[in-house]
Length: 303
Ligand SMILES: NC(=O)c1ccc[n+]([C@@H]2O[C@H](COP(=O)([O-])OP(=O)(O)OC[C@H]3O[C@@H](n4cnc5c(N)ncnc54)[C@H](OP(=O)(O)O)[C@@H]3O)[C@@H](O)[C@H]2O)c1
Image (cartoon, rainbow, N blue to C red; front, side, top):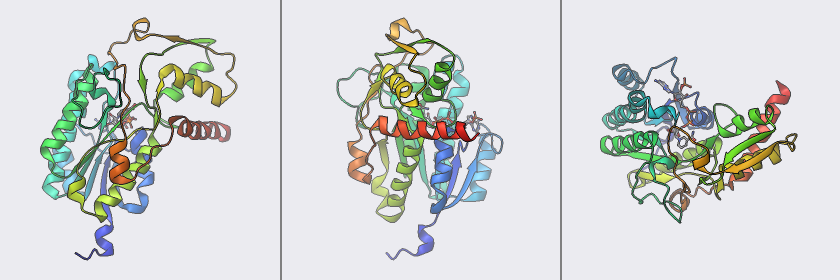
């Protein structure tokens, strides 16, 4: 088949445009075609009939759902809203993608796993969430797989960005207020920059559109390389940001730091598949953390 230039132009329907990942996607995907980016103010995703109407009017070739209910502890007591955002919404969007012959792109979480492992989780490992958020994310994955025949689910972890709500920004705020912080040291994962996620999604989408798309459908782990505990992550932030050498960080166990939702102890994901299939090579977590902190400091300097 001869691909014309117009075939390569994407029509992208993007949800969660002001979230960490959505914000980066909205910028990274600019050269790929036309983007319809919506946030809560422009489209309430819980209004399924309105969502279907807006999607059909736009007629995308790709639907990217980066919106989600991401408050892990609050999810334990806010289950209906969590299920609505994390299960029903991706289900509706996947149905619409199927109806239009479009691709469905969705994001999953390391929290679908139970944390009991001694090697990085692969895409084929059996999920067994230990908290409600993880259960809802797994429900969303299943809804996408059931309703769309052409989908990519990127499974990521410990996401941060220069804006939004995340561990780096929380630490920088707390370092300025406290002399000592207790940080959990027995949960291990890969802190992952939202910009790297967006760039990787763009690389994958280009290949899906240019190549034998259908065979690329599936779940792909998408996280930074290496591993860290929250304590390791906090130390790296403190040491790189500068000016906070006087803040003492004390490692504690999950038992000593109780939260409403249980957390998996081992959240490291294997990226072998995304490297092999899409040629996406993850940066070492601390290298991308430094780039993000540079951006945060630069923003504060020029504010
Ligand atoms: N953050 C992590 O550490 C992490 C880890 C693993 C996987 N993930 C997954 O990665 C994806 C992106 O996460 P993220 O960190 O970018 O999330 P995020 O920053 O929390 O953004 C989620 C977005 O969804 C929007 N949203 C929520 N309810 C909505 C509604 N009713 N209508 C329209 N929009 C609504 C939010 O809008 P408001 O700001 O107005 O609420 C927000 O912009 C999600 O699927 C998440 O589950 C995240």
